[in-house]
Image 1 (cartoon, rainbow, N blue to C red):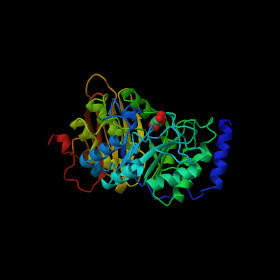
Image 2: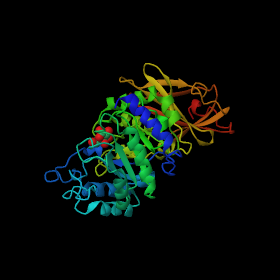
Image 3: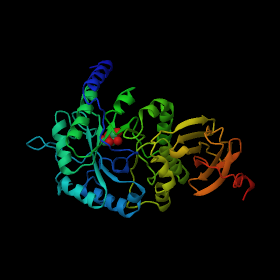
Image 4: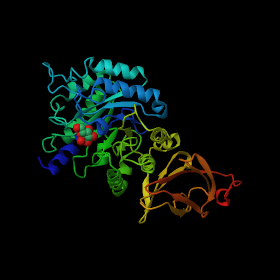
Length: 415
Ligand code: GLA
């Protein structure tokens, strides 16, 4: 079936079934947690690499690190098991089963362990004949697998779309899965990966999915961070209209704490993913993470921007050869702004005003630096705000409407 026909199928089905949309009450703010894929991939060699292979030990240890390392308290609540957890074949009754050697206690026991830490447990599947790594896909088993997940105590399903028979399984499969999950009566976040389809209708998808992976896979690479960022900017009007409470975009993993990003780049990914209101899943080794990177991931003021209750996606409002500026509307008339420098030579100054930032609802804003955790001062519409931004770095601010003129221009006087 060609793309056009698959789109017709999708829209026809969407108007016939589940007309109420995915009203499961979940993901009112972007889901947050940890996922194994970017860091641990499909390493199934537990004999030679027991610490890092895809096994129940890995997920238990990450649950410990998430719960004991302060991540859970900051909002990271899901442990997501990605591809390669399954046995290569279903059991005699056609049920999915985890690899028996790597998950000897089964997934119910693993879910119980993760729940005992106050966390939630997500798993990966593919809307197709196989997962991307070649394990059994869900096609032909949608209702049964949804029931199995509920029995195991799964809280999130990440649904990929490899081996989808030339995309013909897309619309029908995702819609049926969305309904099958609701019919289990267990609250299960439905996280969809639509990245294999060209120009999908993101607004329609949001009727069936709590989050949508829109674009390419993250790698441990700064270039990939920029590539994904630029795609989001190019699509921002469509994506912003399609997202909100219960239906968020997924710009893919935070790679902060992996091997590649510098301190400045890590701050930038954290700030930009937060202002874009992407779901936030780290893929790193939480058992052994640089304390400075951990501090970035646990920046509560930045996380609060991502988790703002309005759920609006921020947009890029300005770009020149070095700088770009992203802003996000938040609750109670506040805004977040990220001033990001792509310079690779030295810190550069950026001068702006509330008016330039299009933060114009109130005559006066109190402005706070979210990485320095310091109030900068109060700014009228045309007051100049000058910041120095490090190469590949950001300055991230929150502007809150205020009536208090007392501190106006405090920062500019150097006090
Ligand atoms: C795709 C997805 C990744 C990961 C792998 C697993 O590439 O985009 O996030 O789930 O499949 O095989």
